[in-house]
Length: 211
Image 1 (spheres, rainbow, N blue to C red):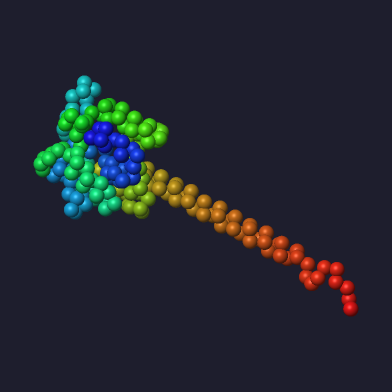
Image 2: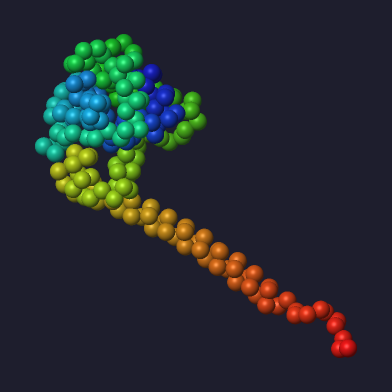
């Protein structure tokens, strides 16, 4: 996963799963081939990999019952995920979807170093891997999804996180509306200015004398 995945993901984040699926790191690392159904465009989240302070890793169920969920995959990224499974994932139905260069399950600190290097090589500053999850959830909220729909997609048992993303979507919509309003005001001022200029234009020929 690491160097082979971090570079293209950083260079073209909009074309890859973590951004549009809104999944967490531990959920992604815990995915196996049988969890990914590209024919029906869905990913089943059933487990997550947790890293302890002593370096030990545990495979556990998501934090809440809501965390066990099926997430629909945007059709636009299905070809990318299909290519990833073909080139990088372990073979077999139980094969891990994301593996390191040496065949091990990636560790967050090692991946983060490769991620930051890939972002730097791509000329991108300040982008954290977890930001992709936020982006995916914000995009989902911007479609007009209800609070319950967002909760189901994100795997949250409470509405708090969903409401945050919905609030961000509303704020963005307000900014868009304000920008449109500014364009309208600008157009109106331009129209009024043109009208005043036309009204000031003298009628007939300047300097005309009676016959």
